[in-house]
Length: 129
Image 1 (cartoon, rainbow, N blue to C red):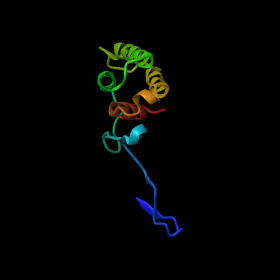
Image 2: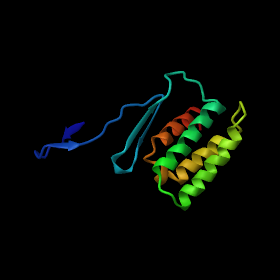
Image 3: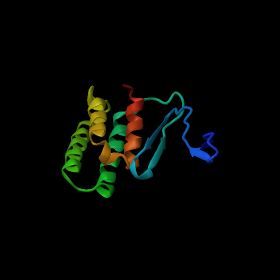
Image 4: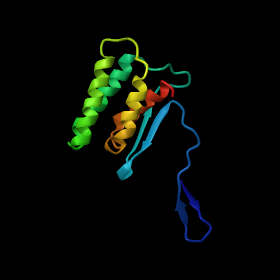
């Protein structure tokens, strides 16, 4: 969307977002924009199997897309530990979403351009908090 800045020099670039519901949108470095749609209004919170699938998808995407290094190794280990806690259970342990959210925030520069991170963030948002 472009708006006229009143200086006569033409339109000035701008972005306007009214509202976003049931979606995750991330604007990352290098002009990457990721949008993930999850359900509609009234969508239920994800279960352990859905969260596990999103964690494993992110882990696989990191192997393909993120450079190897100490940060990725640490994030890989964190995701592997979380995946182990989710495997074979029907419930999400208290504190696990916060731990996962903190990991995504801590390594944001590493995951910002990986669309699987936006999908996982959307699921965490549906869990609340």
